[in-house]
Image (cartoon, rainbow, N blue to C red; front, top):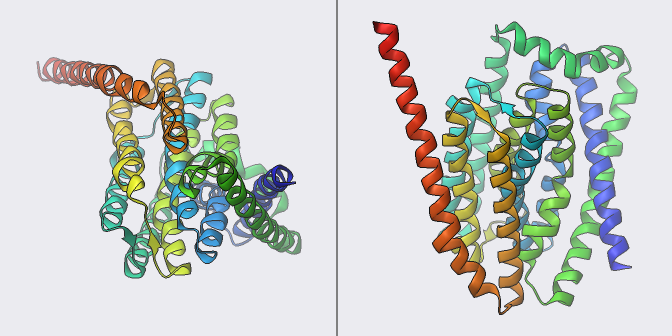
Length: 365
């Protein structure tokens, strides 16, 4: 029964997010909002609605481990797993705005979250700060998108979202019904998912944090998986990456902010401060040099992301169960995998810098 409750909760979250995105997108179209703005805001934020529902519900139920684990685990999952799978399907070309604004903002929000959590609690006022950053960011990207002049970008979002929005723009009551249905499914699904996850954590002898970092994080990220993988299969230039980065920013500023408000602050476990949140920061930072080199994520880099996610998941599960093979995995990561990755990144960045300098000199000549 617990497994059925968990699966039913995940199903309701996924379909609820889909209904919410569809209804909200149609309402936005009826209000005259362009497909570009819809893609950058409604879709990116709507795919994070399962994380919002679960984290707020966990905060209200006094289960901060699930709330923190859900956000941190989802951000790690989004970058390492979703971008990894998407880039294996086709190398991902990245828009310049992501490198200049969105990825640095994701890194900054990750560092800020780590700073807020280091005293063992994300307090109410810190949640308000995160929410304020989210509002400013949303207003900024809406204004920036209205000034977008690249025909390629506009056509891409028109092709992805425009046709469906044009067809449904006049059916306002249908759209309101979709939004209401989506919200109801998210509410019920989050309640079932949180309840099932707590029981599973107790039966396995692991903490709420571990369950939030693994089962809950992967389950609530299913809308992002579908959106980014389908976009990659269709050859969409930056929707696959933009959805992940936008969702990660939303998770940090809006979801943690609302969770802090719902629970009057969020206690953070010491293990999350020592390991999981720093991993989230490292994953965000790792995006910058990879996307900086040629503004693309190649297949081999995606494979590295996937291998890292597998290693990270294995580590936290073994640590949660206090398994005897944990020490061997830790030694392999510290003395082999991490140094090799740093060496590879350094070589790639050095080659890119050398190539750009050579291009600049030849241009001057």
